[in-house]
Length: 337
Image (cartoon, rainbow, N blue to C red; front, side):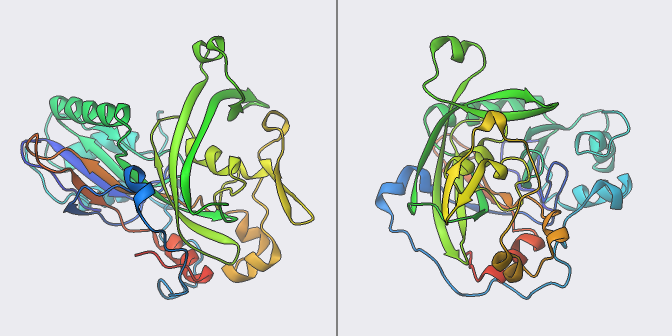
């Protein structure tokens, strides 16, 4: 993983790794560009698929996926430290937060503490943004907040869906709330929320989506959340009847009868391991037991940071796809440029 730092942002470290709830994989690149499909969706022509292969098939279906049980604290610190591109300026649980003190020492920051500015959610891979400078962290948070209010996307995720969205691009709007069901916190949609609902924690959420490629009953989709809510993208794609591949929490809400998909009541649908049809399992070269361990195919691929000066274009950071994600694209005949 590498880190890119904009001028006048001393002390900031942008750590891009395949970090998913705890998973992180290699690499970050940076380029100065400000394109964003969410604000230009109506003016772009969507390419609907490609049969070009994305890379060689790996014998290990989930290679590149780090898990707490197969990596030490020292190895995790080394992985994060190796990700730094430029440098200017729960107890006992192995998580990103738990190794920040060691990483800070490893980077020679002395008494300065690293803090997480932006990171993907649990089980999600992609870019992680860290800072050792409180002023820089505050500046970045203000940039993200202002962009969100202005409906300007600052992050783009790549995802593989089980199913193909009905339209090639569009927006998903839903009122969501967190509910504690059977000992698990789950995101539940709320129809026609009242003012009281909003005051009690219901949030109106919005995401843009665009289909990049499709095949074998699956789609490669770019997602841009315009609001922040736990598991927002997983819940949104389930509402589109296209749950994310490897979503073992919300995919059970989508049922199929005689080839037609429909939603089950969220409040009465318990999370369960995602069930994939036999044809898809064959394409993925997975056994049912392996499919039960399939990681969530949701990757924070692109993150925008403010330019060095007010009129400069945003800085764009890119995190390459983890190897298991690329393997899936290869198996499905999907190509991502």
